[in-house]
Structures are given as structure tokens and as C-alpha cells.
Length: 370
Image 1: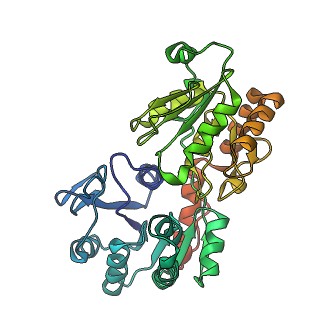
Image 2: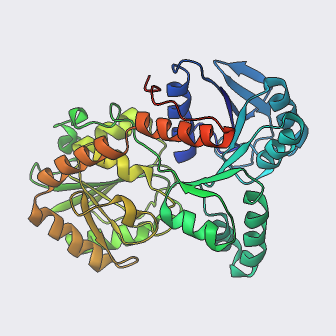
């Protein structure tokens, strides 16, 4: 079986979609009888280890992202590859290139709905465009043979728009990269905070949807016994005294060290379609304080952390205090066990193969565990 993934959501500093595709590519490449090709934007047409770069212009100030403008190069690579199945990872030109290639190849195309497009557009342009964007999503995803959504809340939104054949397919976490063994007892000294200070962390982009002002307001209420480490690009410059900022994109290994060395993850985002950083924290052996919104209500169980009201710094501060009164170490251990049972990438990839065999009309082979 030859599977081809195609997306423009792939850049040096990109997030969840690239993590998903890289994890999937590594695991499918070693499974017997399976070939995996990955089509992503690049400066020139090239191929290395099954990853095909298709020419696309760079986005100004796009931090490495490229935006395809011509359908033909993507369609032509797909036609040359002759895959048995195509998976689309974004709702833009590459999606239409895959559907165009389907007409030539007569193969099924799956759409993975990684981002809430109507919400993203309305956040930036206003609600006046929402109806048109929803109509676009309904038309595009209605063309796919099967649609995958990373959470039930996203699946429900698609179904509400009239999209059919929607299935929930959670993402996973690298249990080796994000692991309690990476805890560094010297981190507090590096940050200049006392050993008994309760260290919180947030890692990700400092975009509007992450609601970082809520985190800062929470820290103002918590005071000097608590310290927050903000890690990622586009972080705020003005922060309370009990907040340290690492304003740059950090490799996974560096984030994993910081995660495992903290006491809990703090996350105020209320529009998350899944939230890989939540899984990374739990895999690192730390519990989570997040908001009861988006996909977090599906991921964060009472054994893994606490949820609080969205956009409420005081409610978040209260949840932080409550979590430490329950015992953050014990909750972190339970969180690690939870992701081991439910979110290992190997299990996720096997679940994906079940979807692929279903749309291909072939029976899922029970022996595929390699």
C-alpha cells in the first residue's frame, strides 16, 4: 500500500501538523508492505527519503512557511507517484490538487481537518466572513472519501456544517522524546528561582488564540511562590516578575527538558482543535492546568490535571493552587500512564491504517503491529 500525504502546513518552526506527519512517516517507513510519500512546499523540486518538496513561494514574514499558488506541480507529482491513497492536511490549494489527481488516478482521498478554518478566519477578519468560509469547508470536505478530525468537538463542527463520513482520529505523542527522565534538577538555578518555587510552563506560539494575557494575569495573582516559563516564538515582552520568557522556537529535545523539569503545564487557549502540547506535558510526567474549552475537555481527565473557566485569570490561579494541594507529583505520574495507554504514536498510526484499509475496501489485517 502506497500512502501519499500532501500539505502546505510544514515549515521549520511549524507545530502540530508537522509533528503528526513526521511521526507518521517514521513509523510507516518501517512497516512491511507500506510505502509512505510526503509532499511539502519547498524552494525547488526535490526528494529525499520519501519526502518530496514541491516549488512554492515563501510567505513574507511567514517564518519559513510557503504558500502554493499553482495546482499543476502538486498534481503532477501525485500522478508520477501513483499512490493508492492520498491524505490532505490543509484546506487550501494542495487539497484541490489531491482531488484533481484523484480524477486521474481513481484513488480515494482522505481529508484531515487539523484546523478550525471558520474560527481562524473570523478571528482575523471578523464574523462577517464566517458564512462564506463555512460554505467553503462544507464544499471541500464534502468531496473527500473520509474526513478525520483530531477531536470530537471538531468532528461535531464538521457534522454541523453538513459534512458526512467524519471520524475522530486523535493524534499522539513521542513517549521517548517527552519523558520524565529528561528532568534537569539544575533548571531552577538557571532561572534564578528558589528550589521550593513551584515552576509552571507554557510552550507554543505566542499567538492571539493562546490567550497569554490570561496566563500573565494568573501569575500576578499567584505571586512569588510560583514561577512561569514561557517558551516559544512571538512571546510578550512585558511580563510580571515571576515570569521568564524564552522568545524563540525551541527544538523538541529542548522543550522536553524544560517540560520534565517543571511542575505543571499552564494553558489558557480556548480554541484548540487538539492540543499536542498537553500530551507532551503529560508524557513528561507533569499535570496540566487548562481551560474547559475546545478539545481540552476530551484530553485532560481528573487524573491528569484540572480545568477552569476560560478567560478568567483568577479561576486559573485558583486551579493552580488546587492542583498543588492535591499533589502535583502523583498527578504527573498518572498523566504519564494515561498517555502511555491512549496516545502512543504506534497505536495512532495503526488506527490510521484502519481508516486507510476501510476506504480502500480492504480488510484491516490483524497482524500489522510492526
